[in-house]
Length: 185
Image (cartoon, rainbow, N blue to C red; front, top):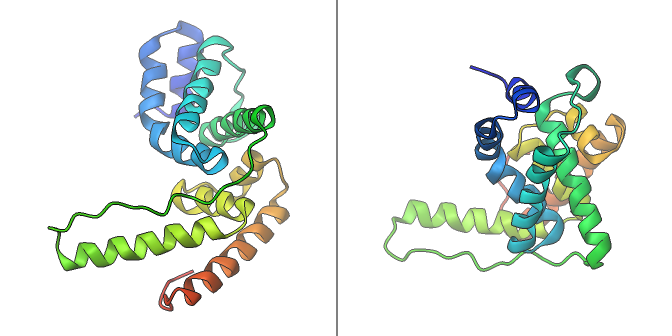
């Protein structure tokens, strides 16, 4: 199977739209959620997602794996920069995440309990500092390494380790206040 790096480099060389579409399909959901963490608006997050891929399509930024790291961390760095420029333009302030998560009354008790736990986790994540939320999302949801996160966030690895540690402690305190004491950290 081809790596994302190989697909992108072939896209740059051959200008094959199917390659860019393949990357969009692979990264759409995760990148959208990452951007949503910055702008707190689904339409803006979707626009920023498309802007990120438009930048790849039009500018075809240079990607050198030996200097930049993984394609994923490079792509998330581009998306982060787009989000920060967008925030500067719009002068957004961080707002809490929407707490209304729909539930289906006909689903089983196990699913209801899982959704309640996820809702509490979602609420707890929205209550921690944005920089904690971002690094924890990249670490646990996107499975990026500390080194990759440091590139995405524009910080050194020590700062990322500190943010992860503080973020976990902050999240643990909030979850415990919500009555969740058996979560693994």
